[in-house]
Amino acid sequence: MKTTPNMRVAFVLPGLHLVNRGAEAAFEAIARELAAMPGVDVTLIGAGEPRDNTPYRFLQAGLIPREKFRRWPSFPPFRTEYRYEELTFIKGLWRVYDPAAYDAVLTCSYPFVQWALRAKKKKGKRPALIFVTENGDWAARRLNMEYRFFNCDGLVCTNPEYYRRHEHTFKSALIPNGIDVAAFSPGPDVREDMNLPKASPLILMVSALIPSKHPAAGIRAAAKIPGAALVIAGNGPLHEECDALGKELMGERYQRVTLPADQMPNLYRSADVLLHMSREEAFGNIYIEAAACGLPVVAHDYETPRWILNELGLFVDSSNEDAVTDALRNAIAKKHEGQPADTHEQLARRFAWTVVAGQYHDFLRRILNPTENGSDHE
Image (cartoon, rainbow, N blue to C red; front, top):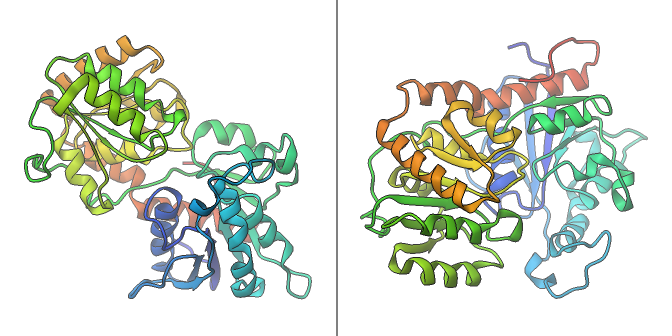
């Protein structure tokens, strides 16, 4: 791959090295792969602690945790406790961020991080700002309130819908998230070692317990399969409601767990089907994590999971609980039939972090060298 000498890249996100999920995990994985490429210098700026033996540089900028703000008032632009947390990150970011040190900075945090990165200049210059739609494309739509002030030099769209929506407004690229294909691979069922329910089949939900994920509807759909067990890996404000409903409908066949990231492959391998009820995702790493471990996936029927999974998914209107139950039965039967032998290889060709980082490198090169030509999507 042709490289641009001394491509200096920074990833900026409050949760970097602080949480190990979602956008943070994706940014760290992409940063590791980019840092391994010749001529690319990578820095991460986040609120976590430096780690030994990372291939990139890490700069720490502190924050006040979001939990401190859960009872604070909600109004634009302080819509949630996450926005308050983001604002507290700016003081440290301003201290450690040197715009002259980078050719491009990437973030998925709006508004305060993006505003700070655009505002700070050195000798009138600032690096190109690349915004990634890890948490949705609301900012890029620029409809009202604080979103009217959004701008960027390049937009990474994590699904085709976002790409179509913005390709004529911003310099855009359609780039998926990825997975560690070595970690997420088929393997033995270890549910007994993990103290999971012994009932079979085992239905798995991996989800934040928030209204937009519709976890209660998933519990009700799973409960209609006689003898089935349900494990939810996740937490959130609806956890008490979900636990009460699960115990009421399924008794000991219901369990909710929180696991470290390195145990997730074993959890997928121990289940018979992954159920995800969300009707909109910026991407949905759990789809490919599950499929790479040999697990069939039941997902709401819309473009993004179909683009990701193709024939590996069973797609259904998740607002119809009876239809979800039927899809679960079909998926369980599909699990016992087995996936095609080359499934993991197919997923690796599309979603290995090395592949994804290569697409980021190509897009950054085009942003920094606009005279170069190339396709902007996978």
